[in-house]
Amino acid sequence: MLGCAGSFPGPDSACSCYLVDADGFRMLVDFGAGAMTAVQRFAGLYSIDAIVLSHLHPDHMFDACNYVVARRYAPDGPLPTIPMYAPAGAEARLSMAYSGNPDDKLDDVYEFNVLSAGTTEIGPFTVLAERVNHPVETYGLRIEYGGRALAYSSDSAPCDALIRLAMGADAFLCEASYLDDMDNPPDLHLTGREAGEHANKAGVGRLLLTHLVSAWGSEFMTADAAATMYGGPIDIVRPGTRYII
Ligand SMILES: [Zn+2]
Image 1 (spheres, rainbow, N blue to C red):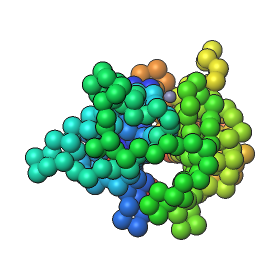
Image 2 (image 1 turned 60 degrees about the vertical axis):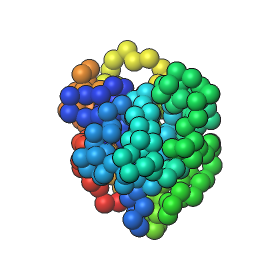
Image 3 (image 1 turned 180 degrees about the horizontal axis):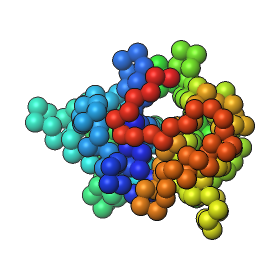
Image 4 (image 1 turned 135 degrees about the horizontal axis):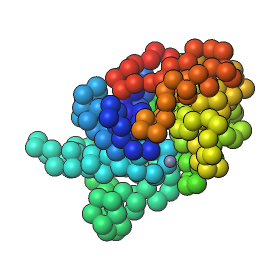
């Protein structure tokens, strides 16, 4: 867990960023604002083999702009291109954020691959992507390796795709942005109770809650609400924590 703050960086965490490691291959899932700090602290600036962006909201992709500098202008010369899997339009979007010109190419840094619904092999991982319930093109993921499965909600309001992606997964890294019993806007995010409900329906081995908005929420209330719907182990993830799936 490199970054797990929801929507904007928190006092103790960058925005969404997770390192999934198997067989010596290190795949970064999301690269939100502030995450480069955690990448350097817990992984290593150049230790990443591939990057997957679940969607193009700043709290899930912004440090992919900052990372351009680190690779392009490294003192010993530019680093080789790194594969990036992201929804269509990612290069123009990152270029706009990086230089203000959508025609500026970042293909000396990233080898862009369009992430869409379906299965992609990334290093040793089989990655299944499916659209989830969020206002922009957003993919929840199911990452499989060696008979184990990690599901990741990305950002999503309740939807059946999350249950399909998480079905029987060993761990379900699931967002829980909102508090229950509040007047939350529709089709954006989950509450703790909804995260627990999806985890229960999918029969996952453990529920890892992420993307809490610390300034507005309550970890205790979120975990408590999730536990009313899901009886398995529940953690609220922290930067620097490693889980063996
Ligand atoms: Zn989002």
